[in-house]
Length: 220
Figure 1 (cartoon, helix red, strand yellow):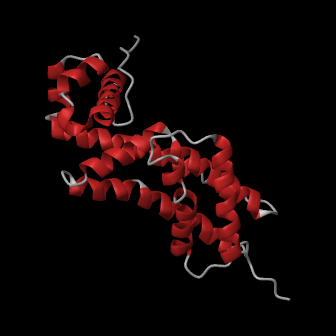
Figure 2: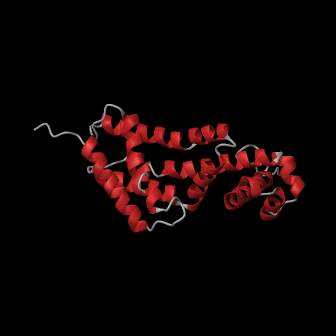
Figure 3: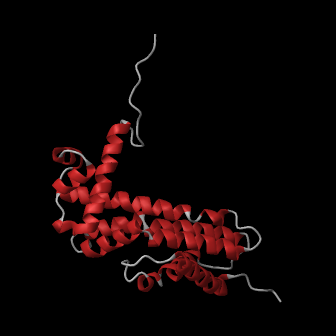
């Protein structure tokens, strides 16, 4: 006797349809909040953008504030995952560490300069006074998570004598600053798309400065 098929489950143990609908709501909410800001956005417009009934949003996510919080957390998790994948080249650096650092730096910059990341930073800046606790959580699951992962990669390179650093957390913080620091001016505070050749130039300059500080010293 054949068994009845159960709905495919999502990552949280929910049926796939329910998971996809939640994701659609959160993505529509983030786009709306990014465009109009928290105060000017309304749940009705978000429901229309997500192609769901307005009561569906209230039933699944509660009020507008909860919707905003969940949409922001989903966005930062997505952008952080993309940045973490940018660190993969550092797992197998090869003989010359410079091109590997430049590749990782370029990938990090592409993630930093994408529309979703720029919109997330603008929203955080605008709404931080209203949601100070959310800002702390976003930093923990976003920027801090990326810095910790980079510090781990750099620590492995130090152990392999590919870098020379006594404080890998500080080194990771400085590498990220060398990458993202020039981007506020180049992107006009996130309102201008930065061409890829500019990202290449920033990555190369960042790695050059970083290696001047952390490349192994010649014993001679």
